[in-house]
Length: 542
Image 1 (cartoon, rainbow, N blue to C red):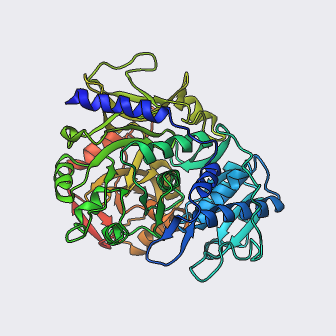
Image 2 (image 1 turned 60 degrees about the vertical axis):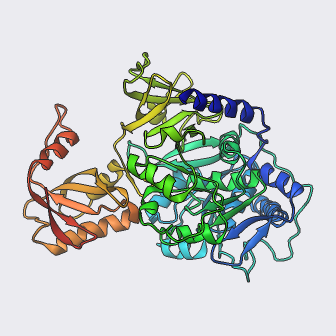
C-alpha cells in the first residue's frame, strides 16, 4: 500500500506544479473577484458580517490608495496589529498590492514586544486597533513612523472608519505592483536564540502554500474554517486557500475550543486544522459533521489519530510545516494505513527534504538527524539577523533545527526539536526570552525555563529559579507575586510560566552554562514543590 501512497503524492506533485500559482497575494483576490464577484469571500462567525469577493476587492483597492496617500510606497514595512475580522486580510492585501511589506503583530504582545518587532522590522507605519492602542499607550510612541488607529467594523459599521473616507471609490484599474519573489511579509517567530526572528516571506511563499491547501486534496474544499489568530501563518494561508477555490473563509473573532465543532456544524465547514486537544474535549458528539471533507492534523498521538478518524467519519491527515518553509510534507487521503504511524508523510509540491547526520553527511534510513528543506518559496534569510542566518542556511537549504527520521520507504517522521523551545497550545515560545525577563524580576538571581508535558496544551512553561540571599518564594507570597508581575509586564500571557520551582543551585556545563538536560533529569529523581499559577498554590510534584 505504501507504493500507492507514494504514487498519489507523485501525481499530486505533477498536478499541482503544473497549475498556475498566480503572481501576487492581492492578485489572487482580484482574479477571484473577476470570476465570482457575488460569492461570499469572508464570513465572520457568530455574526451577520459578510463580504463578497467584489466588496473585498474594492476595499483592498480603496485602502491601498489611502495608504499610498499616507506615504506607503514599494519596499516600505507596515505593521498590522488587528484582532480577527475582515480588516486583517484586507490590510494585508492592500499593503502588498503597493509592493510594501506587512509585519503581523501578535495582539497579546506587551508594549516592549511590539516595539521590538516594529523596530527590528523597520516599520514606517502601523495599522492598529483603537482598543489595543489604548491598552499599550505608555506615553511614548510605539514606532518611529505613522500610526493609523481604527475601530473594527461590525455588520452595522464601515470597515476602516476614520482611515478610509465613507465616500471613497475603488479604482477598478488599480493593479498590484509586486512580483512573485518580492517580499510580502516579515513574519516574526520565536527562535532558540531568544527574541523573535523575522522570516522574510515572499509572495511566492504564500502562493505555494495556498495552492497546496486549496488543491492537494480532491475534490476541493470551499468552506474553510479560520479560527486561529490571523497574525499567525496558518490562518493567513487558510484564507488564501479559500480565495483560490472561490470559497468562503469563516473567520472567528477569537479562538474557542468549546465553540469549534458548533462552528463546523452550523456553517457546513468542509476543511479545517483540527488540534488534538479540541478533539479530546468531545465537543463533536451529537454534531452534524456530514459536510466536512477532511482535516489536517499535526503531531497527534497514535491512539487518538486512529480513534478520531473512525469517530468523526472524515480523513485526518498529518503534515509538517514551519513559518520558514510553509508546508513541507504531508500524507494524501489514501494513506489510511499510515494512521497512528506518526509519519508526517512525503515532500509536498515545490519542496525537497533530507535528513542530515552532520553538515556534510546525510543520515541513513532509520537514523535521526536534522531535517533540511529547500524550495523556491522557502525563505532565504531572517530579517536583520546575521547570526541566525549563518546557523540556519546552508547551500540553498534551510536547516529546521528539528530532528527527523526517514524510513526505508521514504516517509518522514518528526522526532523532536533541537531548539530550546516550548510549544504551548500551538504557540512557539523561546525559553531564553522568558529567562531574560525572569532575571530582571525582584529577588531572582538566575532562571532556566523548560517545557513540561501537558495533556490539554501539549506543553506548559516551567521556570526553575535561584534567588538572591534572603529571598524565598515558597514562604514569601509578595516576592512570588512580584516575579509574576514582572513577567506579565514584559511577556505575552501565553509566555508567562505556569510553574515556578525555586532551587538552591543550578548544575553547570564545562563552560559554566546552566546544564538544562542535567537539571531536568536531576529534578525528576526528587520530590519537590513548584508553584502552579493555575491552581494558585504550591503543588507537590515528583
